[in-house]
Image (tube, rainbow, N blue to C red):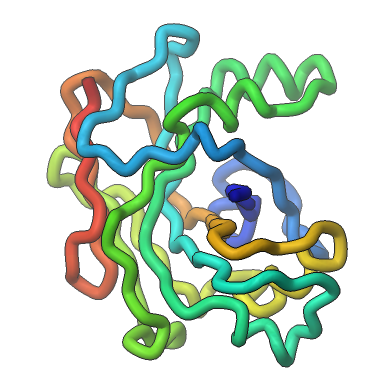
Length: 202
């Protein structure tokens, strides 16, 4: 199982990160050990600047390679919400030294996801909205209609480079509003008003 994360898929997030808009999907991988399905997240000792990035997550349902965009919709049936945790201080060190970002993005439990999956037939991507709250304060609001690259485009693009397998997860990108977390925080995320994810930071 792979965790495939899409970067800069919202124009407002690219702007807040002072990054150029991509002309093709940008993706990176997290290992399966990054997955977390518990309510508690333990703040790692190796960072002092850990940021949340809430995202819509798609689960691949069958093996596919070189998938055409018009057939990509057949490769997923469910969606949920997840968080791409990023150690910004480590990420900055990596950037400054021209190094890969795995230490900042791929550490254990850096990809919490909900245990609840919603059938895509119940989600209209033109009207869907997810919200992320930190200590009951709204921090992020995302609408899939604002994606730079839609889900089918992402699936098709990634499958040109690597085989997608049943159970692979695609984190589709985060909207603006990312920020740091602290021990003692409570994080939660809703999709169309339904709470799917709840995390206590320990």
